[in-house]
Length: 360
Ligand SMILES: [Zn+2]
Image (cartoon, rainbow, N blue to C red; front, side, top):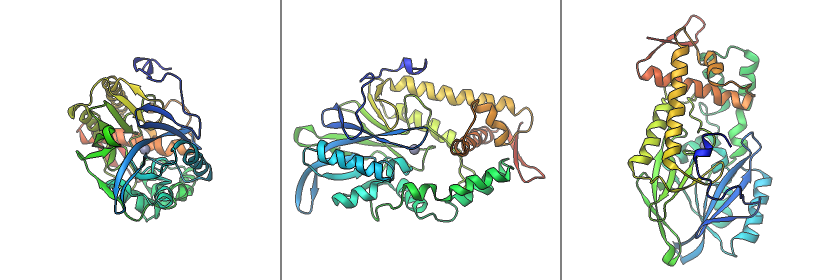
């Protein structure tokens, strides 16, 4: 455990649900994990016991929060869950926090299998649809010129990154054809009988277009998605489709928003990666401090002219594989952009058509 983690309270210690099983973390709230074939090797999903109104009357079952990637292994793992963990009840609703493959990958499969509706924010639903369709500008081929313009002049590496053209589509081959919209501040009632909880939708930005967290104030539970993770910092990147994005600013404001809407210090946080924990205010302070420290390092490096590629060794001390390189570059650029939008850096396009930043 790193020293920052030691400041948090892992409510369930080292207990984890075995693959294909669940662990109850609050009355009517089950924790399950699905594998991922990345350095980040798992995602947490949640099943909330529920009862929803349908044209055929009320149906008792489960709301699934997030889905896992579209692989046979994840489908098999879900089949084990269906067979052994649902007490014979159906999935009645699928709620997706955001458009990233580990969260939305199997949403269409789950919704079709159970004839369940898909609940998402409009921003996340639209991005999932356009990336799953591999539309120009949102596919891998757009990444090459973007990275090249920010200093990745190694043609072989650019080709390799472009070769990841079908990355999203492989993990999210389809997205439900319709959805039910979640909006900031909305209250979603989930539960059965006496045990209905009102979950407040808190949208967040910087990590994805319109990320949804769910906060049950009465029971002090926050399903945080990827916005508040206990061990790793949430990725904030500038992507080709939005070249003038300022995601570090958006993410830092979104962290502050949890405090502004009154998320309490002792709330039980159910994150998408890592283990459930308490210490919301501590973790928010840690993450804000993390980004302020990165911003200071980047600004200090910009006493001389720097591209995003030049900044990589300043921000990342470890070697990066291709998968990590694209995220790291996006993240380096995100920090340069925040400093640029804050008026602390100037941006110029040099003779090689590479954007370079320098302190004012
Ligand atoms: Zn994500």
